Image 1: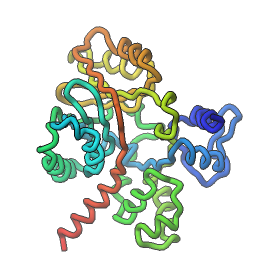
Image 2 (image 1 turned 135 degrees about the vertical axis):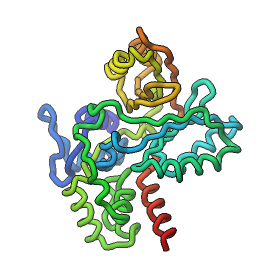
Image 3 (image 1 turned 180 degrees about the horizontal axis):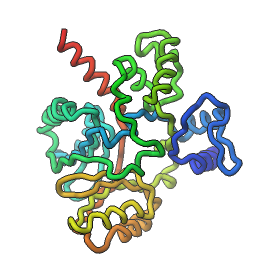
Image 4 (image 1 turned 60 degrees about the horizontal axis):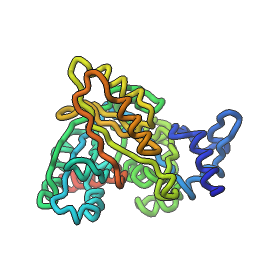
Length: 320
């Protein structure tokens, strides 16, 4: 219990703010309270994870994002199928949901649209015996305010090579992974890994680090309710609908402008069903046409950087 109180205290200090550097002893200071490297490592070990944020993560306005809604044909295989879908190339977020006839919502992200058309669509076709596609939505971030605290940095991610992406894929979900382990996994020396990471920081490819909660490490009574809400409004009222989404009384996981059945797809985190009810009331109002709620039973954040590495290697092999 003491460890959970300390974890919640630290998350209250830094939330999901970007930590630009891990080399100093004091990483952050808020209201006179310090977050040190030793304190950070202890929290990550017990209740959190430390993830690397790259320029491509911050440049969602320039990435191609695709939401795909799926329905399982055999409901008894739903949870087994979830693990298989997490392995789809370029999947950045996979959610197992409850809502009408939709069982899965997958967000695919790639730097080029051809990666989606040439890789993602054929991969989904391989599952046509198991799932039905209920909706496909191209998406983009509708506001610069949602890009952490840094502005987009066009072109920087293009000055990377395959080794850079291999290193990024190793540290994407675990920024505290030892350099020796990274070097062994990518087949280069520890010195090379250290210099590559240093160079990517200098060039702005690695922007920093965020500490996030790993809810599987928390007691069930402390795990919040997460939902994805599909929102559609009348064309003349889209601005006011968007303002209601951005001002909603709940923690926003993401907000995307999409095209099709919905105008916006938003992810929210609330503490109870009562808070969810309050959230839905705040989103309702003039100009709203549709409000579909999908409660998340399970979710995963696949390491999409691995998809970049795999696709790059396949393209190179095709040229030989």
